[in-house]
Length: 122
Image 1: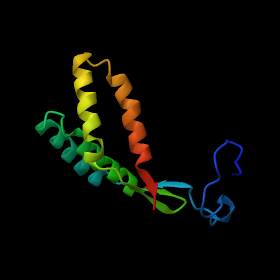
Image 2: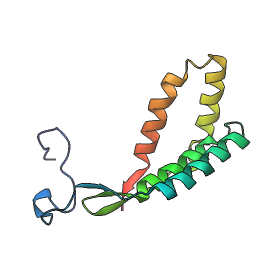
Image 3: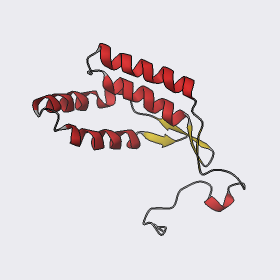
């Protein structure tokens, strides 16, 4: 497999040189009103369930972010589900309680990796 200068495989699809002039490689089209509504719903889900259903709030926010993000004009899509990480979240939640929050330093990178791994290009 041919690699580019960054040791990453080349992107499939249209090569960078074939983009129409003025086309942004990355574009974000989200607006404040929909962000606010999404965040309020996520906070309510989290507070009402005392943090246990936080994975569902994460999915809600990540779907909004992906839906409003475009790479070379193509929309992103978040394919993860709340149930897909629920078991891990319960484990992480309990470990954070047991370690008085110290385990949260491990949770954030793992949750970030899960978000990225479940975001695809449409």
